[in-house]
Image (cartoon, rainbow, N blue to C red; front, side, top):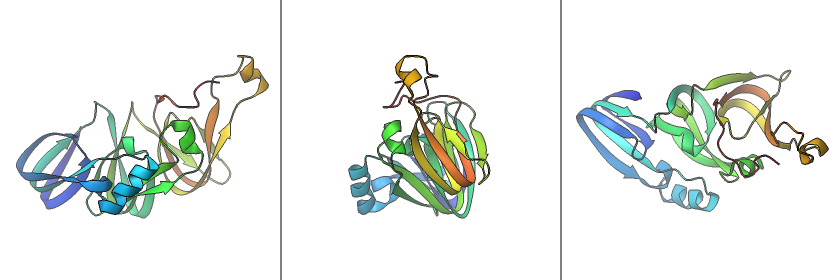
Length: 202
């Protein structure tokens, strides 16, 4: 559970994620994932759904989502790419958007787009079990199961690749038919659990 102390400021959170609060706090549903009418149209076209509310006032708010683990990510003028279903809460000053991610989204079943968060502040992301933060460097690229991917930040390029081989078709493969390959310099957040994916086990 995430406790947020508020002193007249605001936070943006997943709609319905507030579980308790004290003090004087007002809640307002925001359209388009907090990006207004243009964000609403973009998200409907891309299939990257995210319903957001704003909490503003004085007091403490507690946020949670299905007993998921919560991980705080600090941004300092940089950008975070995160699955919309894993974004719990952000400082109100952080900007959210939608960006094309290529074929990776086709494997996860979450469309070809993902949510971005950028600016200076903190974002809270959820994971099914304690998240692991993996470092990627030019010398050490990283392959990630799409069902375990949560988010990434830094100067990273991602490529969707198939692990299907003749052995896979014979039923002798390891069951990991698709991966995301990250190259560059940055961090990748993964969870110790896998979402169901369209690719699945071939």
